[in-house]
Image (cartoon, rainbow, N blue to C red; front, top):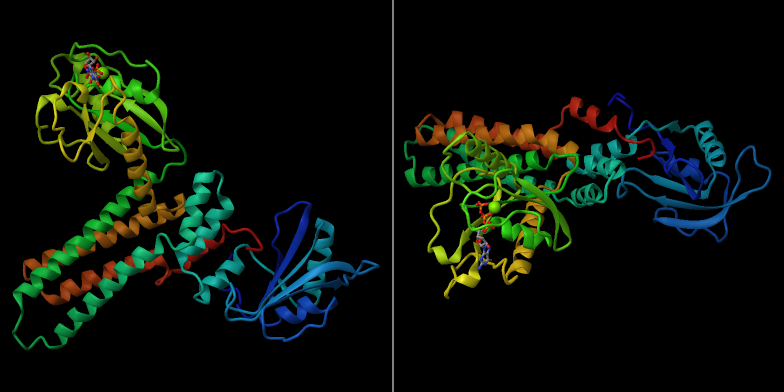
Length: 450
Ligand SMILES: Nc1nc2c(ncn2[C@@H]2O[C@H](COP(=O)(O)OP(=O)(O)OP(=O)(O)O)[C@@H](O)[C@H]2O)c(=O)[nH]1
Ligand SMILES: [Mg+2]
């Protein structure tokens, strides 16, 4: 579809799902929506005031039908409507031939058949919704699983656009300051402390964007459960913990170090979330080729984790500094084999014992909490994720280069240039700067009537 569709046309479409149903809806919007929708409609009670949202039951005459039908007509005055224009809906029995007849009648009275997504396009063009919300509408329509539907609904409520808008506003403020400084460039009183603070702020924003992009990336998987991977040294009790969490003796447990070689997976319920739990080989230097393979598998599993459970037995004393694989994941520090240790148990760790079952519930709750908070940060249907990722990364790197220019005294013009670039990239995501290309890509995928 082309974006050049005239927004002053009055458009109409069947907006209830295809096929017979109890209720069918024809939706009409545009300057003549009310007139077209109400022609031939006899309200059961007199219609009070014409410029209020109103819904009335009554009889509808449809050309081609002998007797009037029971129907309901709802009218909303623009601009406080979804499309920003006058909007009307006619609700009637959901019979496909009947709906087609009524739609044809609307077209005969001067409405144009709506293109796919045209209602939402109008909502967007009139500033009623931003691009991330427009795409969330699409997400809701296309959602094929409850989890995706949740994500789409959350996004519809502004889950993604709000934090991005806040960040973009901050960048625009910074830009305003920078540009004001540029205007007074003759005055040589550059304040080094203010510069350092500005650099820190830019770095901070860049880091947040990078994290968001990375998480979108990880979450952009069509299916599968979140992966929770047990890691730690040999004999840390990973396999026994794995068995305890899964509720079944799946992994071999033994006091011999290096028992687990291949990784094992099993589904496990954590506080209502199904996760894929992964047991891996203990982290140790590879002494032969089999051990080397085990280590590379372990590293790969750890790298693909959404949550890593870093296991260290409580009785072994303070844990060493963490190894570096799987940096993207959230890490939970799990003190294992706590029944063997005297008190006090390590602070800031989740104390567990696979032998007694102590702490397992708390561990599950912590896993679920971690996954849920990661999700709410990046709650986005897959399409948005893919589209946003590039812009977020670009914005992040522009900010980084801005703070480098600041620190190295590269000149305020350069800094301002990069900050503006970052704001524009974020703008692309929230729809404040929109290219026809993006609009076209998104709205083409909508259903007619939405
Ligand atoms: N008392 C006690 N012993 C435990 C506990 N968890 C594990 N163990 C013992 O610790 C030893 C090692 O346990 P595993 O679960 O095999 O350890 P792992 O981390 O999987 O070790 P690798 O597979 O070699 O990397 C076994 O003898 C277990 O019985 C626990 O909670 N309490
Ligand atoms: Mg093991």
